[in-house]
Image 1 (tube, rainbow, N blue to C red):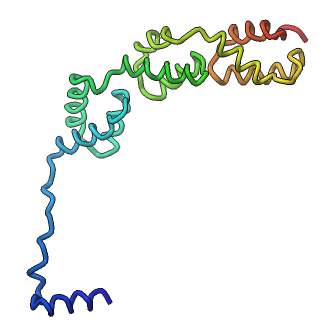
Image 2 (spheres, one colour; image 1 turned 30 degrees about the horizontal axis):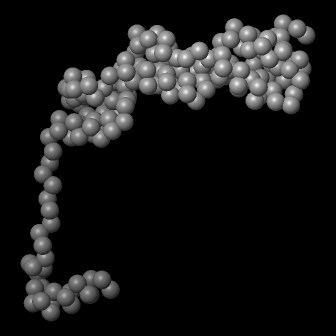
Image 3 (cartoon, rainbow, N blue to C red; image 1 turned 45 degrees about the vertical axis):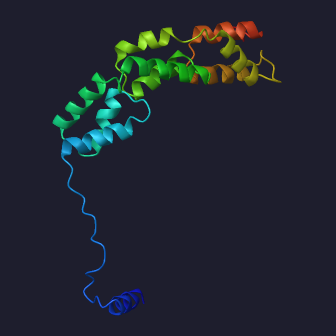
Length: 181
């Protein structure tokens, strides 16, 4: 039906060949380097590590030479800064109640080089208050001396990235000891 309608409109306008239709815009082919830059700027609307940027551009089919050029430009202009990004990740996960182990895992997963981890982990606040709050929530209404409940709470804290020494200290402060039966 649409084809018939188009034909009718053309015939009324006395334009059977469609010459009065506006010309279609033709996209000029972008240079591969320019396209790579565009993709990088779109991707860097929020912070990412150098590895994440390289992986994203490689996934788009960019050449290694273009990836190297664009990544170097992004680093030079400060759009990619792995040290700053590591600190952002550490602060974000610490604010969510995660410990150093989980932060380290996230830094590794996101491709932040290990040389930036120590500085980022040093920025983490003391987790005593957080771990105590999480433990109290986990053991609310339960006997902290019950081994099963105590072990479940300790495992939950360990999954959140806290070390065993911190967990033992928190359990002692809460009135449960990991060493007692």
